[in-house]
Amino acid sequence: MKSPIAINDISVKFGDKAILDHLSYEFESGKIICLIGPSGAGKSTLLKIIAGVEEASRGTVSKTKDLTMNYLAQDTGLNSSRTIFAEMLSVFDSLRQMEKQLRQMELQMGELAGDELTALMKRYDALSEEFRMKNGFTYESEIKSVLNGFRFDDAMWEREISSLSGGQKTRLALAKMLLERPQLLILDEPTNGLDPAGIKQIRDLLRMLCTEYDITIIVSSHILSEIESIADTIGVINRGVLVQEIAMQEITERSLAYIELNVVDTRKASYVLSDKIGIDNFKIVEDRIIRIYDGNISVQELSKALALHDVEMTAIGTKSESLEEYFLKLTGGDVRC
Image (tube, rainbow, N blue to C red):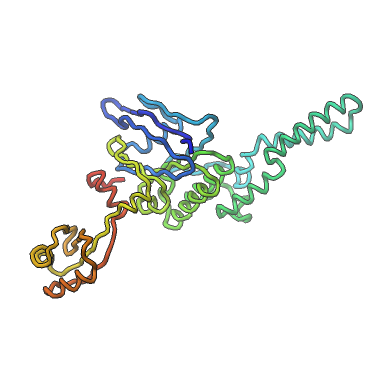
């Protein structure tokens, strides 16, 4: 499927400092693409350039013809003095104006005759058809359905948006964006400042928007565990450079399985592993924690061998690399997302 948007050799400089350095990437249609990287890596700057909010020092952004997109900046939700329902109605202002015209025409019909009436009926029929084609007869039902889907029940519809929490404002912003039917959503840290329940709600909503409405989503986040659960593709940016672009499924398949040991005496366990059992591919990651990357021995075999050499263990089990560990390897251990 054709990419809805692509960046071509994008660079940004502030003085002598390179914020983004020759980035090129095609964003796959109908997927959730997550950008991760250390603080100051250039994620937010890149999203602003893609959204057209800022300009690059060099390079271009290529978009498909008539691409519709919405952008939600970091630490922002929907801010308005309106009520929830009134704000959603504003999406359909052009339809409501069309509806008003139709009502005015209907009143005029009783005052006209002959050719004037015939001409008015012709205009009325054309406008009615356009109104129908744009779902003019169902937009209020659509608003109600979307609000309910985003967990705003009818008891909340007359609440002023200013009274909502940060998480509710973010959800409402996403609800409004859905009503606007964008092909592309650009979201900068949409879960910032939310509690675990709010983060889960946003995560579920993003997956729903992508799978049920075929909306392409570009999102940045510092919560790697959340990215791991929603991303189709990961883009790792470090020091202004796109270090890696990879499908989440490929990361999962590449994830190196290992056996993790919790031992009482790390020195003794290391000696037994290398000199007595013949395993050299292991790493001491913390005091009393050892990871063994030898696929030729099972947990049961290793446990038995260590017990025979009187190595005391408090835990043993198989694990695999998380996205966080993968990220740390790519960025040289910089965890300041």
